[in-house]
Amino acid sequence: MKAFYHEDQRQHDPKFYMKNGKSTPAREVPERGDIFRNVLNNLNVSISPTSDFGMSYISQVHSPDYVNFLRSVYSKWAELPDASEEIIPKSNPGRYAANYPKDIIGQVGWHLMDTSCPLGAGTWKGVYASAQTATSAADAVAKKECDAVYAVCRPPGHHAYPDGGAGFCFLNNSAIAAQRLLKDFERVVILDVDLHHGNGTQAVFWHRKDVMTISIHADPAYCYPHYWGYAHEKGEGEGYGYNLNFPIPEGTADAGYIEVLEQALDQLDAYAPDAIIVALGLDASEQDPFAVLSLTTEGFSEIGKRIKALDKPTVIIQEGGYISPILGDNLAAVLKPFTKS
Figure 1 (cartoon, rainbow, N blue to C red):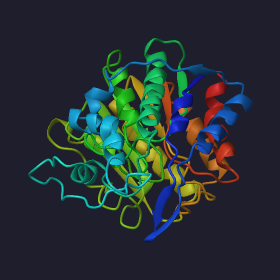
Figure 2 (figure 1 turned 30 degrees about the vertical axis):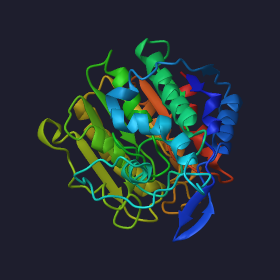
Figure 3 (figure 1 turned 135 degrees about the vertical axis):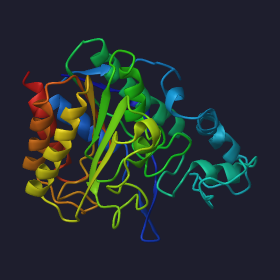
Figure 4 (figure 1 turned 30 degrees about the horizontal axis):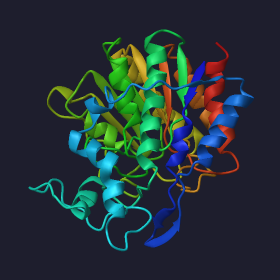
């Protein structure tokens, strides 16, 4: 097993997070990456430097307007009178409003779809490095350098839409990695085991069948992202039937989760993918700050074992999972089956 990480990810260092209407310290912080890398060191998994693929795969997922916004917005924002240190949207249009705004305030509301993705001076460098980390991992699998790769990605990506960021996410790392895999593999599946529905990933591949998206997540009837992730959402057009959602009840523990995972893996097997991307969230943990699902470290071990048993080229991309006493243990539990081959 190989792993990839880029130090520039630390430049995205958010401070703001809103919970129940109150400002509270951010959860998606650089220390997450430190924990993940310490796990790799303990498992004797070497961390390789990332390559820079430029915009070649990012541009296949995200719109030019959005990419240009991410690259340039902070310098424009800083010129505003009394500008805040981090960019938070003032308002958001209904999707989709008729007119793309010319002013920076309007563009912030257009592209930052909620208050959970504060954008700071180092955000572009951080998210760009995270996307290149995911692409480097996919590239290693595509070139058959190894059968399994772990990408230490933060900020995460699965809530990011083609033209907008949300839920701590700016660039959709799993979707970008899938675009790299498609150069060498005909069919790719993204299996998302994050606590939250991968709504951005769903949106990217909604009309496509070359990438199947499968998401197991807390029921959006009571959990973010609220508006997407229901079982009836299956894709449209050519993509109908290639988007699968498995919402599960609040408090679901190991046994219930693994039962649903087996259902999802049956569908995955029927698709017969050539390669798998695992959008790995660890926030379903019983000790995660979000405290919605109740997986134990042993539960995460079972997830890793079952995915490894599929015996497919596998790219594991870090999504959620926030600081708790067992965050590192949970990552190690997922990765250990892949380190034994």
